[in-house]
Amino acid sequence: MFPIELVHCILQHVACDTDDSARMLRACSLVCWGWLCLCRQILYKSLKLDGERDIQRFSAHTASLLNTYSKFVSSIQVKNGDDRVLRHLFSRLSTFQRLKSLALSANFLKIRDYSLLAGITSLDVTGSNFRLFSVFCDLLHAFPALKSLKIEAMLQVIHPGGELAASVPRLDLDTLSIKITQNSPWAVWLSSGTPPVARVLDLRSHTRAEEISRVTAERLSRYLRSLNVRLEKLMLAEPIYANLEGVDFSTNTGLRCLHVSNTMKLMSQLVSPLPRPSWKAVISLSFVNLLDHLAAGNARLEALTLEVAINPRTPYARQFIGGDAAISALVDVLQRPAFAGIQRLEFHAEWSKWTDSDLVEEFRALVVDTLPESLAQMAVLL
Image 1 (spheres, rainbow, N blue to C red):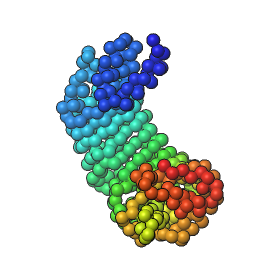
Image 2 (cartoon, rainbow, N blue to C red; image 1 turned 180 degrees about the vertical axis):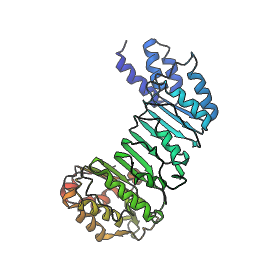
Image 3 (cartoon, rainbow, N blue to C red; image 1 turned 135 degrees about the vertical axis):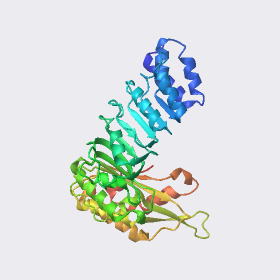
Image 4 (cartoon, rainbow, N blue to C red; image 1 turned 45 degrees about the horizontal axis):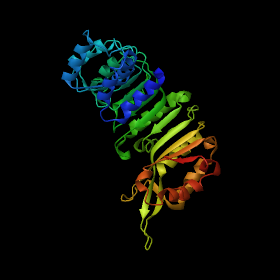
């Protein structure tokens, strides 16, 4: 008999590498009692419940003597539930000893008094809809040990009177990921008197830069200042950082990692008689301004990740600059003391789609090789 650790590794490979992994794991669970426990850990580690029928059947099964998996489940994803079935589901989840992650996609209308789920540390409410901010607050009160929160939910109003609910919980998070829209009510919460504390902050947006209102941008700037030394990693989408003109990073002395999307584009240029296109790099002027604000503050970055868009058919907008001026602007700002301690510089793009061209080599020649030598040696293309 193999050591139990080796058996566990083999069963994990079975779960990952086959289309019929569930059937094979159930067959393996019949070998012996030890294999049964290992297979259940993998089979029941993550569950997905879609719709009222799924949720009701799951809740009923957890209350029966046939429940054999509640002690193995660590992650549950729930979609399309209403107030009634969610209330009953929460009362059952409190018995799940290993449950750490919960993803909810539902309409939260007026449900109150959730069962306390003290073991859950990660909550994702992507796709949910909250009519009032007070409903969202009631949900948060059910997770006193929360460390990770992802919000891409719709929030219609903060409060009928325009003010925050009085029962806003004080959150001390490791990670906060939040989607910002044109006049995002979530930005009101972030700039309130009881904002969530986050060591890793991911501000994302699917709107255009010009659709983010000035008021929303000012609220986000205030929130960044309020995080001060506690902020360690910042992830920004282009519509967000393009509007943070007056952002002040002087209080964010603990900031060590920055991840920025849509920082530059590679544009193809067909030059006859060459059989392959040559490439031109254009850089977001807003991104250069963001780095300039960082350099003026007290942050000392150790890791910088830049997302590169390879989009040869779309002309770049006015806020992008190209040619030698673009590279010169990037090099000048990266030579500031705030970036002297960078130990890792990553350029993220879909490089694998362009294996038939010399894109990687041209990008290194256009951008990487022009950077300060200390940064060029640490550059990685992923």
